[in-house]
Image (cartoon, rainbow, N blue to C red):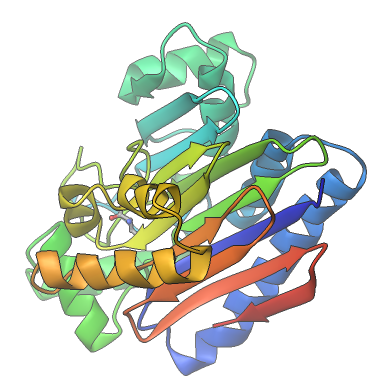
Length: 305
Ligand code: ASP
């Protein structure tokens, strides 16, 4: 089977001076995940490895470097789904973990499928995952942006995503990956700190199955990024996979899904990456930029922002 991997590093008005860092991060994650797949590793392992690297890169709004809530702390959401079994693991409102994607991976094994807040952290500790202080996840750039939002008395949640898209203030560099391994298994993963100045406890699309991500090994997988409230309203990832079910090629499915997002929700903005079991890739966004990188046995590595 042809191996393939696609990474996204967020869709928004990424400022010119941040483009190189976004591309470098996506390329590094691609190399990391590709190494796993090329060595015969599973799609789930490749997704986890790629997303972990992005969570550790402070450029992105995931793990270290995430945006802050209106209360000035980091709250992380992540999910991973195995398209060959339809099993998934999701976590939300996690405050004390550098790599929530690894916690989601542990949740995937069961017995629960989605854990949030304190219970998720208790589960992490019971699984032997290293916990950290919330302040360990906060970088000076995000503390400064939080002060900006606080001074402007911004409205939290989606509103802030919307405003920052126009003003290029604050990041939405959620990260995600889709992998296809040598045995034909397909997996998807997504991880985020959410939207800048979000209400404490707010959960966007990223960890919600069918919204921020979905994988069905028979037809393909989709991972989304952007304004979470809008993406959730249209269940964008499931919608994109449904387009694959109807026989559309991945690129057309990605374009139609993003067009639907923009039409269905006023100001609905974001991006979507897709991979099918034949290793074909699709990607589309209606924001100014989306950071991405991909590679398959059909193409050399490609990246952009
Ligand atoms: N979709 C994420 C959220 O709303 C943000 C992003 O993709 O950048 O939480």
